[in-house]
Amino acid sequence: MRTIEQAKQILEELGRMQEKGLAAGIPCPRCGYPRMRHRLVENSLSRRADVHICNVCGMDEALRDMAGSPPLPLNEWGMVCGFDGDKEE
Image (cartoon, rainbow, N blue to C red; front, side, top):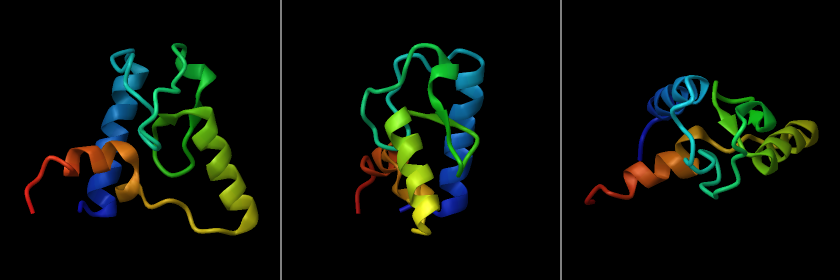
């Protein structure tokens, strides 16, 4: 499993790709579901990393903050776990 810092680097690199319009068709980096809207501004900006996530995940982040619950660790996000899933243990 990657560290939080490594996960943040991966996610923020995706964020830079999103800003350049190079991430079309990539699923939500947080949940891994294909919920991202075509226009980047119609998605949510994560509170945890400089990357856009789907609106369902954006709402979950806001509700967790409001309830005082801990955030989903960056190294448990769908995109990061997807990269780690290819490794042999």
